[in-house]
Structure formats: C-alpha cells, structure tokens
Length: 127
Image 1 (cartoon, rainbow, N blue to C red):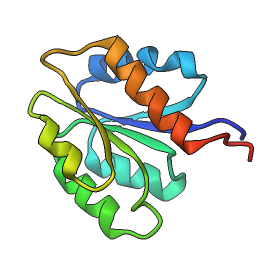
Image 2 (image 1 turned 180 degrees about the vertical axis):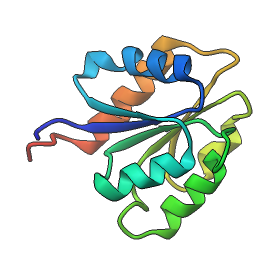
Image 3 (image 1 turned 90 degrees about the vertical axis):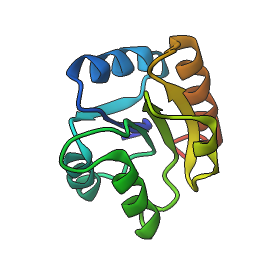
Image 4 (image 1 turned 135 degrees about the vertical axis):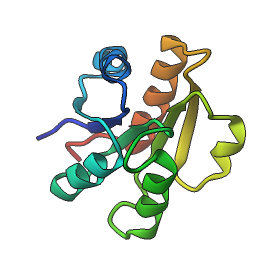
C-alpha cells in the first residue's frame, strides 16, 4: 500500500472525474462511486483516509452517509470534504467535516488546498 486512499462520492460522472484529476497531484489512490449506498459498500471493503462527498444524490444522500459514518466506530474519524451546491460554512460544525467546497463557485485551487491540509494532518501512510 503506502499511499493515502480517497473515496470520491458524486452522482455526476463528470464531477467525479474532475475531482479525481484535481487531486491527482497528491499521488493518492482514489475510488469513484455514484451514491451513498455504493460509498458504504466500498468502505466495507477498504476504509478510506479521506472522503470527498456530494450531498444531493439518489438512493442515499450525503447527509445520510455522514450520519452513518459518525455512528460507526471504524469510520467515525474519517475526514470528509463536502462538495455540493447546497453546502455552506455551517457544515464545518458537523463532526468530521474537514472542508466545504461549493459546486457553484468551484475552485480547483481551493480543493487542492483543502485536500492538502487534510492529508498533512493524516501524516505519512507508511508510518
């Protein structure tokens, strides 16, 4: 292994790919899933170091995913960056939300800075 692993959860395939490309500079392993149910199934197989999470999705939305993550011992401390058109800074008060990126004013620079801070706080995956 030796690398950080991020789960990107968004129902829009173009958004998933843009997010993956935007954080590729960090040499981080990524998995792309289309909704909350797929996210939880993926997490059962491999717990990510970081989750980039859209809020408005079919089947299981991001709010439901966040609730499930915080209620489960092995996922409670995973940092989550919320990426959504309905996000706002008050979301930073939700436990585990490490950043909020608005889709309506999306900035690759802001995303990279936020991901960089989260990864720096995680430390070396080899340690």
